[in-house]
Length: 160
Image 1 (cartoon, rainbow, N blue to C red):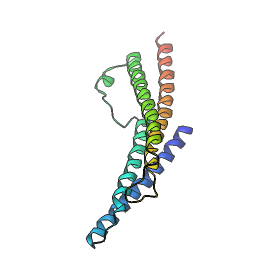
Image 2: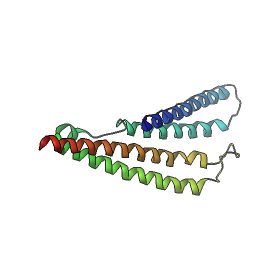
Image 3: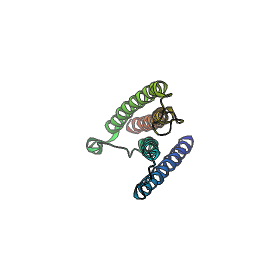
């Protein structure tokens, strides 16, 4: 239940930032056509796109639709398949911890940097998307690991 709510929140945030990206690009194209300089549009578009992509990447990881090499996975059955899924989940969990940890370091290091066109905006607001993505990926991967272990134990019980 919590994971579904978290996913819904992330999808909403991602959709909002994707909308901001689209609207900003439309403004940028329109202002260029009428020879008005709106220098802030490039940064807003870039940073909103970053947020949209990072929120979407975490959700796709939860749905197991982000990326996968499933040639071997399709050939395996039973415990061997569950073991491979478990190993993959552990690798993704380690990767998620790294994203979270180094994302926090990046936020701390770059928080007070400012945007070029909007000097009131701090780069920390952009960089904080990285540990948010990493943290939610950790939550999602722990949920996947719990489900994989439950399934693995059921495989052992039915095999015996």
